[in-house]
Length: 215
Image 1 (spheres, rainbow, N blue to C red):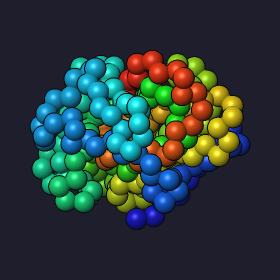
Image 2: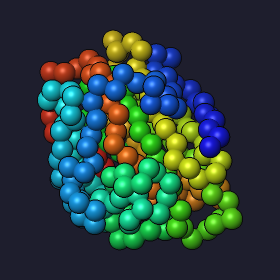
Image 3: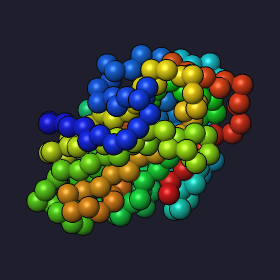
C-alpha cells in the first residue's frame, strides 16, 4: 500500500496523522459495541470511548436512517484484518454514492484517527481501486473548519487518516468529518474500524450531546 498526504491550509498546531503511531491511543471506540454483524445501527445509538472517562459518541443524522455493523470477510469484502468489526456508512447494501459522515464528541479531543476503506463493490471505475479520504476537524457546531487534509490509497487498501492537536489552547476540536471519493471523483460508501482517540483536549466543561452525522 502506498499512501500520500495532500495538504490544505489549516491551523498550524493541528497536524495530519497517517499511522496509528501518530496518536497516543488513549481511547478506542469498540464498534462491536453497536451489535453483531448485520445489526442496523439507527440514528441516536450511543457508545462510550474505552480508556477516556466520560467521552462518548452517538451515531445520528444518516439520511438513510442509520449505519450497518459489518465484519471483514462477512458483509464487508475489503481487506481489513479478517473478522475486524466495522461500521459501514451504507445500511442498505454496498456500492452506493455516499457523501460522507461526521463524528462529534461530547467533549473536546486532542486527536483522532482510524482506518478507512472505500467499498470495493461500487458502480464506476472498477478497474481503478484507488480512492481519497478527506478529513476535516471542526468546532462543536461544524461551523469553524480548523483543519483539512487528505490521504490517498493507490491500490484500494485501507488507509489511516487522522489528526493530532499539538497546542490545545485555541478553539476546541469537537467534530470530525470524513468523505471518500473514487478515482473518477464520485463519493462512495465506506467502512472504518475502531477509532483511535488521542488524549482529550481543552473544553471538557462542555459535555452536551454528541452525534455521528452523515451528510
